[in-house]
Amino acid sequence: MRLLMAAVIILPLAWVGCDNRRGQVPPRPGQSSAELAAAAEVLQQTCQSLALVEMETLGSDGRATHRSVGAVLSDDGHILAPAGAIIAAPGDGEASGPVYTRSITVTLKAGHPDERRYEATVVRESADLELALLQIDAEGLKTIPLGDDLADDAEVYLIASPMGMSRLAAFAGTVLGYEETEAGRVLLHDAGGSAAGAGPVVDRQGRLVGMLSAPSHGDGEAAVAVPSVEVAEWLESPAEETKAELERLLAPSGVAYHPAEEGGFSVPYEGGLEVRVAQRDDLIVATVALGALEPTMGLEALRFNYTDPVGALALDDGELLWIARIPAAAATPEYIRLLTDVGVTQASRWEEVVAGQESDPPYGLYPGGEESAVKDRLASVLSQTGLDYAAQENGHVIQPEAEVPVYLSTYRGMVWAYAFSGGMPGSTEAEKEQNARELLLRNATTMLGRLSLDSYDDLAWEIQVPHERLTPNYLENLVRIGVREVSAVKSIYGYVPFFQNSQ
Image 1: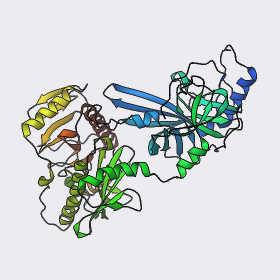
Image 2: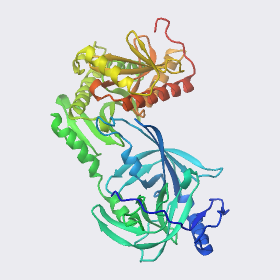
Image 3: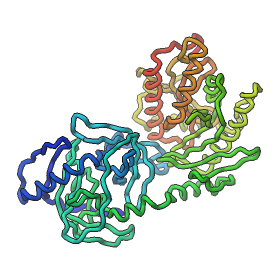
Image 4: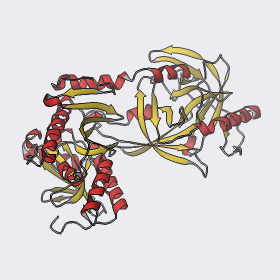
């Protein structure tokens, strides 16, 4: 529901903290002391069930931060938030580029010494309702109850974080009614129609009665929120939207598939192997279950990753997986087919490795292409980024003077990005094996790319992308993720010298 901006209205506003101390604001024309006191009381009542939601994006226009306020719905970290900026974050198509651009941070008790910050993931989102359900790793949170529809002229309060401040404010207003729109039923109110960084609409008793879905309504007088009744229905409904989008990619890919009980789809292959394909947040994720990892095979699994076109071996809850992730906006039926074909091939190859047999790398699965055309494509994309880079004999180096330079080269139709942390950490084989298992655990949670060991047993973050799917902002994000992953490994294990013959 995309609605027009309303005129700016002077509205009663209250600042308050969660430490039982009221903030103060200068008096404004039209403010009522009673309205100000009521807004402060409501905010004091609800603020521990509210969250400041900040999303940082990196796109063709550079970095940007989007701010809103969310409502804590469960004590184990589910948070409802407006999703206009969140849904719009990933690139869509060649113009904006397929890119995983968002990093979402949730702050509880914002603006106070005991505030707590968490990284958040998106559980589900609705473009029609402009709602997102986030998840943070927390327990024992205070939740806000969902309220019912209200009568016209009932008091309501819009919670926001205006003017770029890391604090919460309450705007007082009243219900103007409910209205049916093409996108569904909406709550109209006049509490802070132009408030930036807004989110929950609560009643006098501190119950959530709506979530702001757009800055304002087209008549210039009312703000719009999704009523809590519709919020509850959406949360209880099956998450079919994402599944339908994924099926539109699978259908023309040429693979057989069927819905999986755990969500997503199962793609069966001969020999009893199957690839599970699902969408998680902005990523398409393909996995193959490989069973337990043998106690002495951690290092071998990291070496195995170096010969994988698109995926990696990873440990998740004690189980060894082959896993591949690509941005949903970059996905095509051909790209999905590449993931599933590589998945079953790598699963079969790993069985051979475990059995002590020789196994040739899957060169035949690379997309291929004229090498000069692939190199030209990479050079063109790189020139359109804002990255500092220099040409090398075999490609390019990005941020050559930085602590973590990222290298680019081409291989069989792929653009290959990689960065080294050093040698394999550990002073004994037993320590190296234990560290290898820890690194495989990290592969299960890395956004894009994987950790692997090259032929010299030097440790690298790397990723390979079909050259025709690479765009400037996709590449910028790969560099950002690679630098972050390598920096994290260095902070955990310290400096480990490279193998003496390594580059």
